[in-house]
Image 1: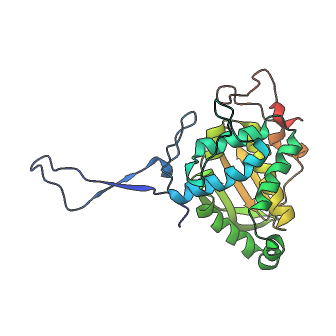
Image 2 (image 1 turned 90 degrees about the vertical axis):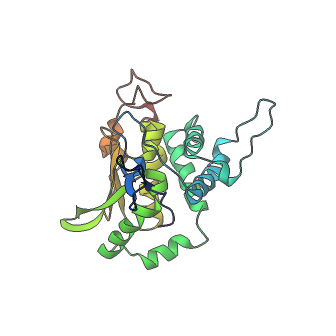
Image 3 (image 1 turned 180 degrees about the vertical axis):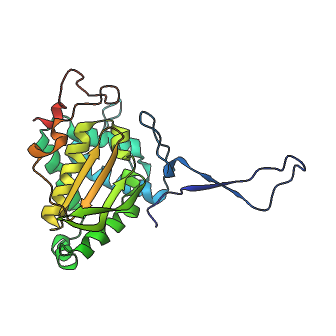
Length: 258
């Protein structure tokens, strides 16, 4: 798909006996197809389209974060193509700072709505009523179209209301969580707004279950998300060694409590 970065590199090696290059090329897996172990960062090779999406989202989010200023006080201006994933995460972090949990979630919701053409939610509801087919179709679309944001994922079978269906998406190691290292950003800037966006705006229930042990995440289309107070993530502590704004002494991430 167009939004996926190049995941296969091709290398050639000379024959030790003749010093000539073989006719066949050896396929080498890049890091983007195999997430790095916990505690290490996965290497991605983003193409122009991935960087464009990062730039579009980041520029929308700057409305709530404020632009960075240069040493002389002048606002820093970036073209869409100048953004990379690190700067995208940085603007997300700036949106979070100084805002309550509800304000962070509302900011992301407004950014998502602003990315859609007028009337899109109503059209989505007509095209994709909450049926098994719609859930499985959206799960299949998630894998290629959200690759730039969350990294490698795959469609998996899940059980929704006692029925087994292929409407689950397993994110192998979430790129957003891996790069931010922040539990609060994962929950307030991704999980809750995304769940709400699909469930409330599009009428297609979605539950996201991040695993903070290995940074994987399971998305279940068709499953109504629980209230945050009943969700296990509401009790999650910070990553003290990964998050630059963590509170190591807190038993629960402070960003989940206000």
